[in-house]
Image (spheres, rainbow, N blue to C red):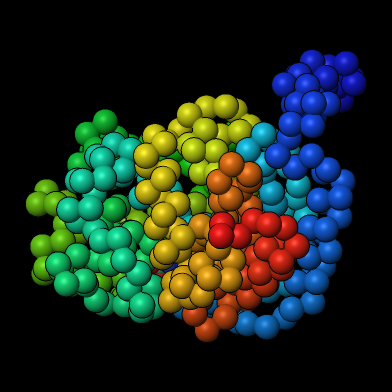
Length: 339
Ligand code: DON
């Protein structure tokens, strides 16, 4: 247990800013109280169904509900089952896209993937008018960004084990040193029920959507591995705060992504991050976010905070019911809507 003196010393910058009232959330006690009230309100919501198309996802306790916040100056708030781990699923997609942007640049990445919402389900077998996946936040687009990382980033080693290791390291840095795990059972379960993702990949191959040297089966395995990374809401909040802080993790002060990669990623999270609910989410909540079928969600409020949410019951369009309600209530209480 550290002494008060040690605490002040190791948190010198935070303490100085707090006394100078320079923190982005200056009245933390009041903020916490209001967030707790929203959390409790949403806890009563038992609408929606847990995803079962990947059998391992169906085994999770539907009552789980956690919310974590990490501000761009490192204040943290954790509510509910925030120590429970779950698979990140499609919440990995923006972070994988940003890795591709960081190493290959936006011109190269967008030779292969578009920037428009698809207006369809996340696992739809469709391409845009240029025969590219609509955006990197849906399955087809994420499978393509995975192929770019796998076959075009030489510094990642060009071997499946090394490419995954480098990618996981990125996630660990984004999480500011919090533990990022891997769920082997979900990974196996994903592969056993991957007919649609295989169908999408062959459709992409038919339309020459992949770089010439990419290998379809390795690309798909890498995609499933990214979906099977295990996180908690504290981890997601820290990852979101790295986006909200222009690529610098507030807990470690490490610069992880280029500022331009973060800008592009937040733009596409804003317009395409919530499946076929993205337009309504942008309208009502006005924040960049990304959801996944495990009931996970990440929100980044630029210059303010990252938020991690998890509740496994999903609505018809695949978003966590409680998490969506939480975001709606949050922007009613605080002026976080971008417009
Ligand atoms: O592709 C799948 O089926 C999942 N592993 C990812 C699903 C997911 O979260 C959908 N998101 N867009």
